[in-house]
Length: 239
Ligand SMILES: Nc1ncnc2c1ncn2[C@@H]1O[C@H](COP(=O)(O)OP(=O)(O)OP(=O)(O)O)[C@@H](O)[C@H]1O
Image 1 (cartoon, protein in one colour):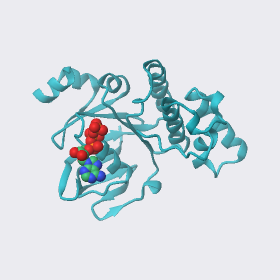
Image 2 (image 1 turned 180 degrees about the vertical axis):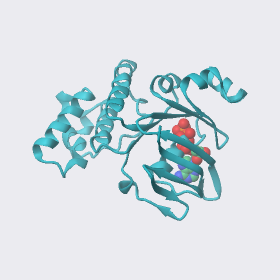
Image 3 (image 1 turned 180 degrees about the horizontal axis):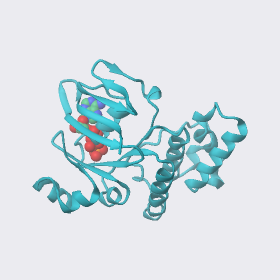
Image 4 (image 1 turned 90 degrees about the vertical axis):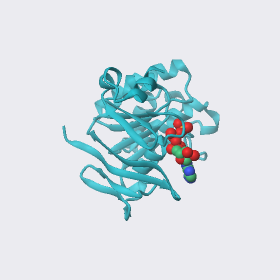
């Protein structure tokens, strides 16, 4: 399978301090990768570097055969065709839910835009909320709008930072297989950051365990569970 996303020995720093050091991985098209690791290990920083919000100190990032980050060049987030769902939703407060989801679809005809927004509203279970404004939705509902908005532009790569953290268990259990289903149907390549191992194991084709600035293992769920790379991964996975 052709590697669609390649991180080649990337180092990400804040000021003088490196947060991620010489990290490499490949993700084939249509696969879902997931980063796991203890709080503060750099999962979000890594996601932000892939999205183009953080420059690299070293290495390069290649997406669909295009170099999108090196220490000397950084394709802007909006130019690299990467969608991101943030922990804090980042919805437009002055737009209703339909317009939030359809924000990136202005080049479509009114009808095509309406159909696309309707499909996404249904996907995230918010068809009855199309005309509401973000402040009148629960945190979980806002998170689902953010997800629908990110999927709307059909990005080459979808990045999800703790996308389910504000959802109740029932919604999470309903949405998770639905999300995997829709990503797979669209051959959507995605990377997810989560604290929840169960979630990672249910969703991911490839799981990455990060600790001490390094990617300790990047492999299938089965391999992570049956052949952990070292004692640290073994202990972390069993926790
Ligand atoms: N803008 C910033 N400037 C300086 N240091 C930062 C900045 N953002 C994050 N850090 C530091 O970088 C490290 C990694 O943070 P990051 O948010 O990437 O971790 P994380 O694994 O996503 O954590 P969590 O699971 O708690 O969300 C932390 O030590 C954090 O304090």
